[in-house]
Length: 329
Ligand code: NDP
Image (cartoon, rainbow, N blue to C red):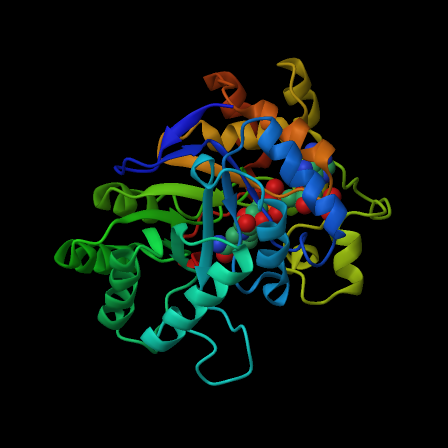
């Protein structure tokens, strides 16, 4: 495993992080979740990503349990606030009230005294940003949070946040957007704005939720035990079928398999390595439903892809790459 600085901050993160959306507390049992965390630690992953909303708060509990015996200083624990965690009017959003309550609840579930990076999971148009960032700054001063990040914010929102963070002298250091060979909407606007603000990117869904693993074969049934098969019976999963599960997209993805093989990689490794080629990415968050996936995907760390490989990827996927910055968030 190789490590990178998170933006202009002094915080070091593993260039591959493990996330637990959809898996812990939902798709996989707690034993498998723990085995995935253990596999991650074994190969040098130190950065873990979760959110209060994942699996209706159960994901944080499962992760907290899995990491309980680990020396706290040896890992970076990151979580998020914004999406609803209850039915009350204040159980959501980025008001001071919800941020304070949500942070305390996350600390309890994660069994820790502090969060390394605390993210605004989305922008909240119904709360003044000054109220949100003041609450974040207070959490930092209280020592409950070390750094602040945002997820799926537009360039304009990041710029507004960066100006306030400067005024409040608050360590605003990360942006967490979706980024993969298929989903490149950050490149035009978010990346320049984040770079200007000194933020590093910790990106999500490098495999487009498994589509870029190559295991979904066009015109064939969904593989048993896959996220897409699970999604068919659980509508709260993230519209995987609607977006990419189409035979023409899957056919294009299959053409990447020999490209990966040519350079001694599997397709999931190529997909993770592709994200890591970008210097504005500090870490790529992978998901895993079993430990073998962690062990396979982390081999992308340290891989250099040459220009020819990168242009062949672009040619093959060309028609299916989403680049519209308006799709942020
Ligand atoms: P990926 O794109 O890496 O998809 C992970 C899934 O792909 C796995 O759960 C598994 O699903 C499948 N997979 C992984 N490796 C392999 C492999 N080698 N071979 C075959 N299948 C494989 O990432 P996620 O979509 O899970 O997102 C990663 C993390 O990003 C999340 O856990 C979360 O922490 C963060 N995130 C943040 C968001 C935000 O709004 N900030 C939104 C979404 C995610 P299966 O085996 O079930 O098919």
